[in-house]
Image (cartoon, rainbow, N blue to C red):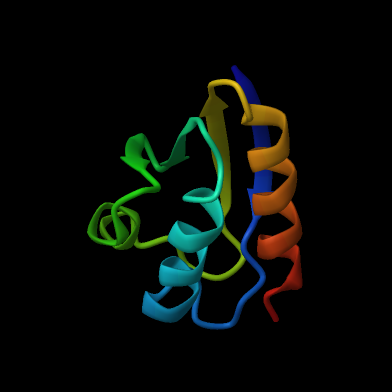
Length: 85
């Protein structure tokens, strides 16, 4: 399992548009990806679950990936989250 802590810098937090894009990014990889925030966990393959976390701007959260392409998935998600402004 590969994990990384990230901070969402996007002004609206992880709202619908970036959440949908995140689902698309994570769906490219053969592994399970989850976000952890504020004591809750959500599978990134479901936009509704990602939105249910309600991750606001400047919040720290954890990305966990488990599977054959976990390293690539975490790297791609990190790049995506850091590109949001």
